[in-house]
Structures are given as structure tokens and as C-alpha cells.
Image 1 (tube, protein in one colour):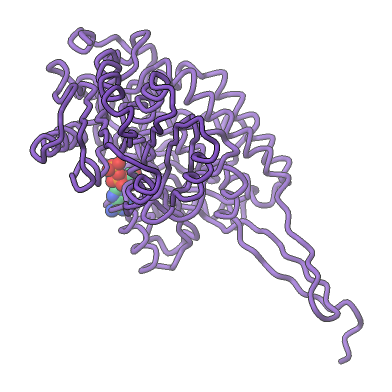
Image 2 (cartoon, helix red, strand yellow; image 1 turned 180 degrees about the vertical axis):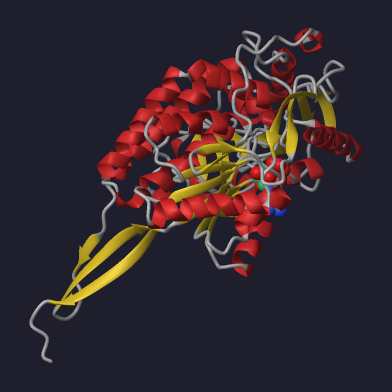
Length: 497
Ligand code: ADP
């Protein structure tokens, strides 16, 4: 854990693109303004990035509208669209290490994970959606009466997409992939903390043959650029991933403006349930991964670790030891499991949440403080004896803080797991098939991982029940978010006029 104190490793990549990408061109913001994007390892400036605002969003929507109404995208054959997406995936693979380095620099996540998991997953997502492009079709349905009834599936139009900073490239893939496969055009607003990777890969997308205006990238802040997109009268669909509080705002902006269709992927407080029949060492490792992966910055993080009372004490001891062994340090260094948190706001929020856990009487068994004296590193932290009413058991922490709760039986853990406004995901660890079946049906969540966690295959739908969101991303279900349904009726016989 000493690595956090050492001099930061020089990133093996340069920042080439910092402007907005509108209509296939890199351009400055209309205001000429820029904002700094920071290195989470040090808080120092990586680059100054064009700061998009209302006027830039407007320019981008005009470009996307033109590319939709007049331009080639929805008019191309689906096969042509898919080929451009396949070529993009090839270019992502070719530039894998540069993209990963840029992401690590801007986000702080371990380079090995970015290079081996996240960037390859972006290529995989693009190929998955490229594969769908020429397989999206409507239906011919039997109706009462002498009518030939067709149901056409058409693109919706211009999609506005707002993404967060925790998985900038995956969120890009989850949103851009289905929108473009279905023939929509897009204006994407990246998170202000992580604007760099989307600019880099979208440049590659254009090299792969993406026509101008089909995908526009606007960097900028939420209440300005984000709100402009959510309330734009000429955006037909909005896809948002972020906090539940902001999700409510964008839904309201969408309904106050033009009632654009909205999908939301929001917060969570996911239970990770450890039954007493489980192999404790494996359970500890899985629960550790479920919470600490990506510096704990996952909407679906297993942030309520429910442990059966018969194995509770042993679990807590081992979870503590595992957290203390976690390798934290410069994310460019080999073998690092955890880098810094994304920024000072999140860093301070996590430390406040840790303090609230202590103040409310949870038992701090590991970590609890900043690591080193530079950047936004936080010690892997574990609380035991957490009670349902505590803030750390109810609210998203979005950091490396594991909360362990004790339970007695299945009914109790079902009730307590479901006693949350969120319903994003859940993990179950058991060898008992009946227990797994009972839990997986009873849990009111969009994803259940049994004896695994965070499996994010392109084909698996992801999304929330309750206040964790509307709609599903990835998988076949994600296409529905980007398709209009048109019913077309013609008489089968000569009409009697
Ligand atoms: P986080 O707390 O993880 O930063 P947010 O929900 O604030 O989560 O941010 C997710 C995305 O939403 C970011 O791209 C951010 O800029 C954007 N955003 C934040 N506030 C607004 C807003 N008022 N309107 C539209 N987008 C917003």
C-alpha cells in the first residue's frame, strides 16, 4: 500500500483530442471556454477540455438531426451500418493499450483492468450490436378481419445520452451500440470527470467510416450541457446513467420539454447474501470483489454484505484480512488492485460516510482513512455489526467501504434485502439449489448473480427495479429503447368502396 506515496508513473500515452466532436469535426466550444480534467492520482491537470453548453448541444443536435433526416445513417443498409461498427471494433482492438492508458489516467482505475477487461469489452459490445444491426425486423401479425397487418420497427430519431465517470467506455458502448445499430443518431455527453476516452474512440469510429453527424460528443457539466440535452425539443430519446437524484431531474426536464422517451440506469444498494453452507474463503473473496471492484465505484456494488449468523464471525475476520491485503497504489503499476477514487468530491463524500458509520455505532474493523497524502486514495474499509437503519446501509457510498450485516434465516434476509428504495442487483452465495431458487425469485432486483458477481456480458440485460431505473441496457431488451413501433394496416381484399 506504500505505492500511493511514491511519485506517479508517467502515463504511456498522450492526450490528442480535447475539443468537442460535432458533425465529424473537432471544434471549440461556442463560448471558447474550457475546463480542466484532473489526474485522480495527484489532483493535477491532465488537459483543458472544451466546455460544451447550450449552444454546443444545439449545434450537435442539429448535426444529429440532419444525419438522421437527410443523412445516410438510417438510409444505409443495416449491413453497411454493421460493417462500420465491426471496423470500429477492430480499431478499438488495435489501439487497446492507448485507450486503456488514457482511461486509467483520467479515471484512476487499474491499467491492467482497463487494458484486459474494459477496452476489450467495448470492442465486444460493438461487435454484439453490429451483429444485431441487420437482424432487427418487425412482424406480420394476424388480426381479426380482412387486413394485412405489419408492425415496423423504426429508429426513434436523435438520441441524447448522458453517461457517468465510473466506466466511461462501457457506458459509451452500452448506449452508443444499440442506438446506432437501430439506425438512430446520437449526441453523447460524457461525464465532466472523464471526457478523454470517448473523444479518442469516436475519432476511431469516424476512421472506420462513421458518417459525420451520426455520433457527436459534447464534453461539459451536468446542469449546463446535460440539462440542455435532456430538455432539448429536438431530441427524441434520452438515455441516462448516473445518480437517482440526477435521474429525477433529467426525467423532469424530458417531460417538461417534449416528452422524449427516457431510460434511466441509476443507483443501487445491492445485497450480497452469504448463506451458512457456503465455502467461507470463496464467499469472502467474492463479497470482496463485489464491493471493492473499480474502487467501489459501481452502481451495482454488493454494498450490503448479509452474512448468516453461523458463519458471521469467521467471515468478518477473513473479510478484514482480505481488505488489509488489498493492493492499493498507482493504477499504472503492475499488480495493483485499487487506484484512487475519481475526484475530491467523491473522496470527501466517502470519508463522510465512513465517519457516519463510526458515529452510528458500526464496528470499523479495517481501513477508515485516506491512504498516503496525495490524490484520492482511500484505505480498503470494512464495517461489521452494521444495522439496516444506518446511513451506510441505506445510502450509496460509491467507495471502497464494505458493510457487513448479520442475519438468521431466509425470510429475514429476503425482507431486509428488499427493504430498499433501490433494486439494481443482488449476489447470492450458496451450494443449496432450493435456497438459490427461493432467493432469486424473491429478490426485487434487475440482476441476480448466483455464486458470481458483476458478470457483464454484452448479451445479458442490465437495469433496475424500483428507484434503480427504467428500461434495460445490453442484450436484446436494450434494442427496444431505440425503436419506434409502427403499425401498418392494408385491406387483404378489395375494399368495398
Ligand atoms: P455522479 O454523482 O456519479 O457524478 P451524476 O448523476 O451527478 O452522478 O452524474 C452522471 C451524469 O449526469 C454526468 O454526465 C453529469 O454531468 C450528468 N448530470 C449531472 N447533473 C445533471 C443535470 N442537472 N442535468 C443533466 N445531466 C446532469
